[in-house]
Image 1 (cartoon, rainbow, N blue to C red):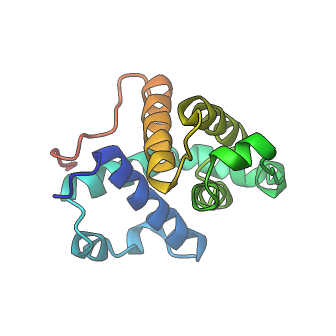
Image 2 (cartoon, rainbow, N blue to C red):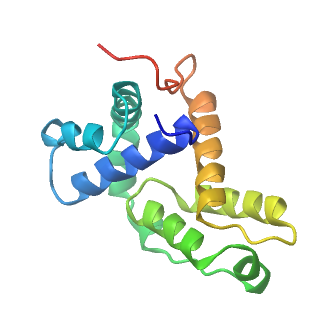
Image 3 (cartoon, rainbow, N blue to C red):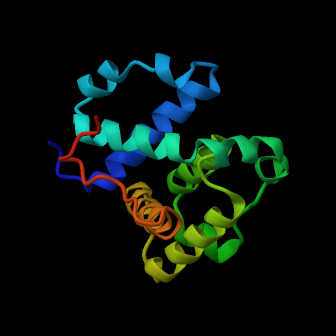
Length: 155
């Protein structure tokens, strides 16, 4: 298994699945074998699919209110100096897929600014910030449910 933090890997799977669903593919028709070929474990794939299914009703509600996804935020000078264009592009991709709300983006930018200081927050750092943010959000909103660590499987 890759040495990257498992939640980051789960986020990549979620982005892949949400992207496929945006193209009109139903969840049941997503090719999880392709994810396994890319090196993701069964536990990571199961955790990502579980997360998507748990948030299914929230995503449907978000689709009803398109104003969040139609708005556009730009980085001001200090933010643009701290967050790399690639990292900002990833945040915009997650936002456009409906994975992150405007409020989520604001929280992540705030965390990146605190973390960045006088260094550039690049793609790897923003992935880590998003992973920690989403896993913390999942803990707060799902009661006793948590993202799997990547070694478990869902039956």
